[in-house]
Length: 104
Image (cartoon, rainbow, N blue to C red; front, side):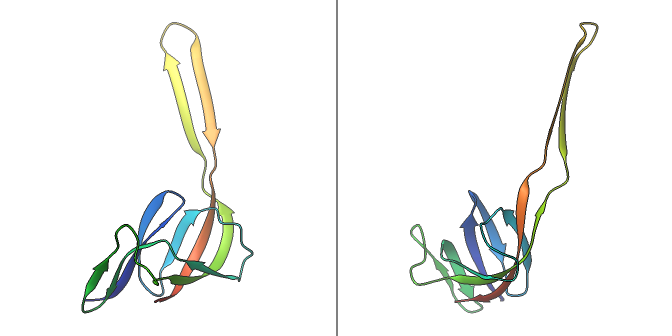
C-alpha cells in the first residue's frame, strides 16, 4: 500500500500523495509559500486507512504553491437552426497548482 490522503478544497475532493502536483480552485497565496490543508477526509499511512466523520482530526496536508494561472477557455455555444439564434459564452477559471510535500 502507499501513503495518500483525500482532501477537500474548493468544493471538490482530491486524492493526493507526497510529490504530486494538484490543480485546485484558486487559493489566496503567493507562489512559493507553504499552504496547510486541514480539511482531510481520509488518510492512509501504507498500513491502515483512517476515515474521518466527516474529517480526520489532527491530520493535515502540507503543500507548496507552484503557480497561479488560468485554465484554458471553455466555450459554450448555443444555436437554434433556421431561427437566427446564436449565443457564444466563454469562461476561464483561475487555478492554483500545489505540490504536496507531506501528509501528517
